[in-house]
Image (cartoon, rainbow, N blue to C red):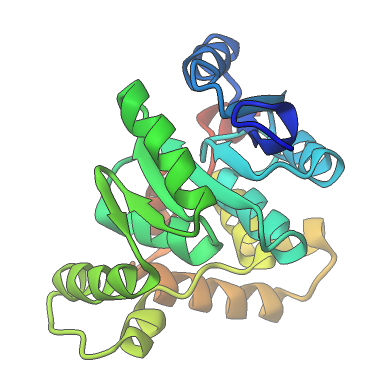
Length: 240
């Protein structure tokens, strides 16, 4: 008989953040709960993917602003292979539009980095049980859909009558589009990006058109600022 608190019944958690002190702090906080076991810690996106496939955690606590691959890309890749694993995004970039991008990438919860220990532990249990959590709110899937309709309507500046309308406004960037956006933030021209990625100049232009439409911005500069402000691309990577 498996008792509450035994290793076999514990929620297996992987922590992904590039700041070692913050990672350890989160680890110390969540392991105060006898039903949670931190099985690993990762400092960048690529390592996080490898560890997730290897450790098969129940819940991943994910930062967005990561080296190598940002947290939204990591979430999408992990969820495509491990749909039962729940992802809790923990980030300092806290706005409704960012929440929507996280949910669309496959996250089940979105918490600011100043989340209280009690709320974080509660969120881990909630997502493990199949719920969603945004801030202090625990929601069902239907609740999340209603929240999206309400929030996206406000962001768009006009009513949104359905989730399909919301999807049209906030389609996630594809892996290739995210890669091109990263190069844009580094100041590369379309021609330079095409050469670097081994694709045609026209293909890059087509992707850029899609990026601008999905982010609802007017030009490359605005797209770069959008990515930097939300931690999709790190400033140290831009300078590299």
